[in-house]
Length: 150
Image (tube, rainbow, N blue to C red):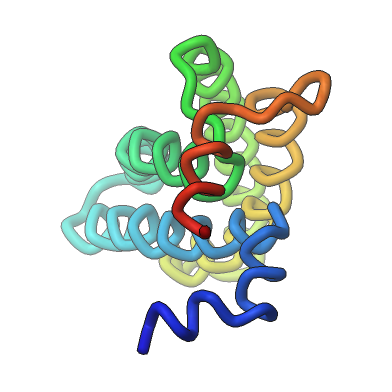
């Protein structure tokens, strides 16, 4: 039954759209990272440290999920760019977190308020600086995914 649903043309069309795969992987990543953040806040960790903890643990998880699912590139050559990007994203997240603290002091709510902005910034910066496919070459994971779909 799942195989029949998976092979449906509309599902395949969506799955072939990179941004849809990014949102799918991102939903899983967000649940994981936000759960880590909320847990850290609930046990009394300062929000800046909670963001670091969720960023570090989440980025390890994200490297594989975005690389395999969304962008279909899993290459050791991009690890350094990925780490640098996530360091920059940490400071960006911290800055918007502090801005939203002016609206409410509920750190769990503020974390949720940051999510839509961070999703957009993460997608476009990941696509441009980490997972940019040069010269239209298909990567190994593209070929693997294509073979799975046949």
